[in-house]
Every structure is written in C-alpha cells, then in structure tokens.
Amino acid sequence: MVPLGFQGSERARSCHNRYPQRRVDLYAQLVTGLVSRGMRVTLVSLGEILLPDQTSWMDHLHGLEYHPTAFRLDWMHEGELDFEDSSAFLSTLVHELKPDLLHLNQPCYGSLAVDVPRVVVAPWRFISWWKAVHGHEPKPSRWLSWYRAAVSRGLTEADAVVAPTVWMLDTLHACYARPVREEVIYHGRNPIFFNPYVTKEDAVLSVGGWWIRVTGFTFNTISASHAVCIVGLRRSQLRQSGRMSKLRWTRFGFR
Image (cartoon, rainbow, N blue to C red):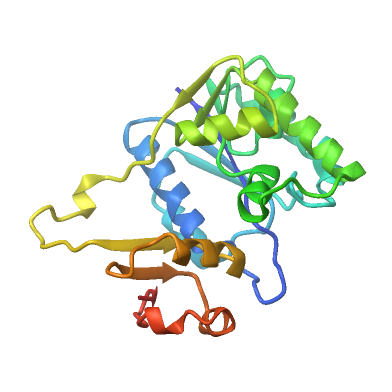
C-alpha cells in the first residue's frame, strides 16, 4: 500500500513565521505509524515550507519521500490563484508514483482527476469555523463563492470523507455539501504515551490560538470549580478580556 499524503499548513501571519508545531507533530505520528507498518509514504506539504528542525523526524524513516511546496492554501484569499497549478503538480506526482491511496487534508483536492481512491479528512474549514466563532456566515464575496464551490466539489467527488465527530460531519453538510460516502473516525493517540495509573483531576483543556470571542464563549460555559488550561493564548489576550482572575499561569499556558 502506498498512501500519498497531502498536508496543509498556515502561512505566516504578523508575528508567526513557522508552521504550527502541533500540526507537525500530528503528521509525524501519522507518517511514522504508517512507515513502521511497512508502508511507503509520499508526503506533500502545501503552504509555509517547514524549517530543518521541523523535518528532523524524517531523517531515519526509510520508506518516506517528502515533497515540500509553497502553494497557497484554498482558504487563503489568494488560494484560488495557485489551485490550478497545485492540482496539476499533484496529478503529475500521482501519475509518476502510482500510489494505492490518496490521503487528503485539503478537501478541494478530493476532485483531483486521477484514477486513485481519494480519502478526504475534513477538519475545520473556513466557513464552518467562521459560523462557530461569529454565529453567522462570512460576508458574501467572489472568493467565498469560489471557495465554497471548490470544497463542496471536493467533498462530493472524493471516494470517502472522514470527520473526527458526527457534529463535524453535520457542519460540513450545512456549510458545503453531503459526501457520497462518509465516516466518523475519532482522534486517537498511541496509549504508550500515557500512564493510566496516575491520579487525575477534573480540568478543562483548550488547545490552539483562540480569538477572544471564542475564549469568552469557553469561559462562559465552564464551571468555576474546574481548573482551566489554555494552550496557545497570550497574557495580553486575557487581560483584554478581563478573565485573568480565573486562571493561573503554567509552562503550557494559562490555568
């Protein structure tokens, strides 16, 4: 089996100039797990080029071929400009490598015109994210119409679409389109990294660079008796929201 992986990234914004490390770790675990089971993997990254210290985990993986690219992602306002070229690049790579399966993290490539099964893994997309944060869809625009059409076409033309929760599938139906074949596969981790015998406590963990609007929602819906740890949130954001009194600082974030 020769999976071909397409990995999305976030382009640099203001003070960010690195690919988010949490996503690098996610794909490192996925690719390492596949290679350790005897599969050959070709990994293609789109967006920001990974830095050398972010690709060091690939050094000793025999059976991995990595192709970094700088094509802009579909949810960027300039993403449409690169979509034709990136699709052509991926199609050429597929014809050369002849993989058994495409594992796609950018739904728009589910419509890639290749004779290989295409599995789209559908996490948050722009419109569904916007609705969850703001409570309504973003303002209509020519780019938004193109983006919705591209994602919807990718979802309906993929051989299968996988989402981490039933809620996420329902959100895809409401914001884009209903896939022909869909499955829910929950997120998982290798249990070897966890100790089941340690004492645990009730706590709320929020991971990611949340905007204040989302953070406010989180604080308004949790119990005051729970410990709270927010990873990826800066002190200045909490001072602006007036929520500092409920949290303590930890080396991972606020608690």
